[in-house]
Length: 265
Image: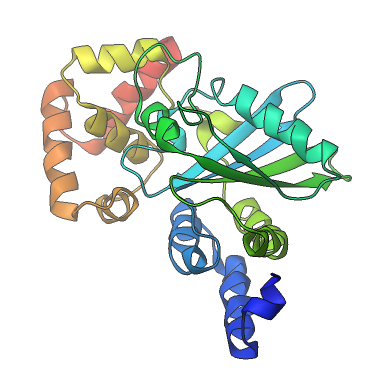
């Protein structure tokens, strides 16, 4: 079955309108809202991983887009996903650069190398199906690989075609947003495991550390609420607890202390 045969002309026109909205995305949240919103009708997924770089040497970065609680780029070790991504990239090359699908084993797509249990690690163990497709950038001499994962139902041929048609738009959307600090920008604010442990020793919960990371990226309470799917009031309450635990009185002081901890760690 092909997408052309499975969708009516009206549905195809709607699909084209939906993917064309990629050019409107200017922030990570807008990309998230697009992929987790209307695009779910055509390419349903629980996690999407956008990766880029030199897959032959392992010099790659990635973004994680998901509505699952705690499954965020900022809360992951950038090393632990590389074996999975490099393996899928090699399979994609071997396929002639066509979309590939794979089924996980009994442990899902478990991530090796993480010393402590993480939301991402737990989520990857529940993922049973993956589809990957990529783009080779001949001008900048690096490749991009996009991986969709989900718990239920393998990816069918129609969805392979959707991935092929939608991938340039997904790529455009992500190229229009700024890199996260750990992906090459100056002033990285992503805590190492040591800093994470220090924050926990101060009494901060995993959710509070996640919120503090978004605050350090300049996000407002309403924006953080939308990203994490919690109310602005809940974010505000978390911030008050963060201030108390970090012995500060405002956002600027909390971010300043956080960045000092990161730079020293």
